[in-house]
Image 1: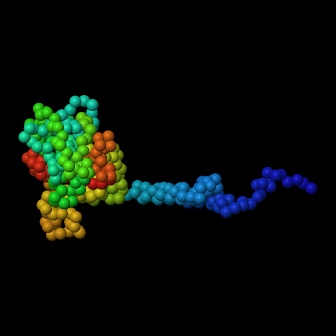
Image 2 (image 1 turned 180 degrees about the horizontal axis):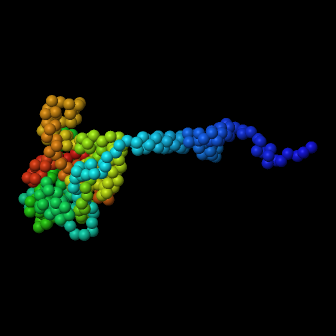
Image 3 (image 1 turned 135 degrees about the vertical axis):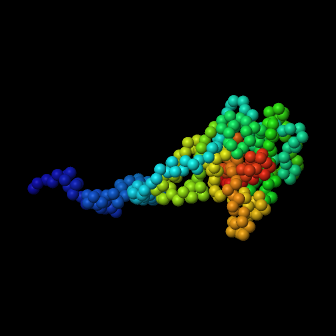
Length: 356
């Protein structure tokens, strides 16, 4: 009687257990050249077999989801590649706007975050409800113009911005205007001493007044593109492939690493509603937004034509190092009509805060 080869007998053993049978089936499909549609089941088997955690199927499902999304992405890329695609970078070049990004620097500067403001003796510290507003930033426009003059802004003077830092204004009601103050000093503020913080009144029970850390600012030119959802981009009527290409350009544009940037000019890096110009137009004409369907009223539609007159003056992002926390990692947007900015009527600014 011949003795069978143990190795040969081992090879002849049939798979036992559901996982082994499943893997054997997958291998048969692979031999049929259908493996591109078969998830690598060995990964599933190994994780399930060796993981004593009763929730072991969660990573398995994550792997399956990742694989499915990858397959769907490959299919979409093939479909988009077949579409005609114009030169989107050149097509959207006219949409780019000049902006000045605000960087922290150790060098001396008349522009700075936080600290104490330099105010003329006859200018009182702004308050809201008797509580001092927090000083956020001083922008020396002559310093900014040395990097790049934004042609719709004065090329000299200083902007001082104060806000209710405990309850940053959402800017959804006309009455929110009390929560900020934008002061323009045409001759600059370099000759004035720093103003001491006024006494905090007893009604400041919730710590509305905050003194932020002082950091000097340097300006750096950037030319951001509008976000894909803005009307300027929609007006180009890009097809799906072109829009995909534009989204890639927008997400990787130089000088804007993420939405938490602070800068003058340019486009807003919106977190929620991207049509803030219309909101500013309605609110400055006494139309509240905290009502049902605020944009569908006859008054809103009549005022909508003036929304294009608004420009982003400044975006101030939440910043842990500076102590800025606009709700949950939000952004604060300061808006101006271009006509008012050219005439230095900065008291007419409107502020909107969006939560992260």
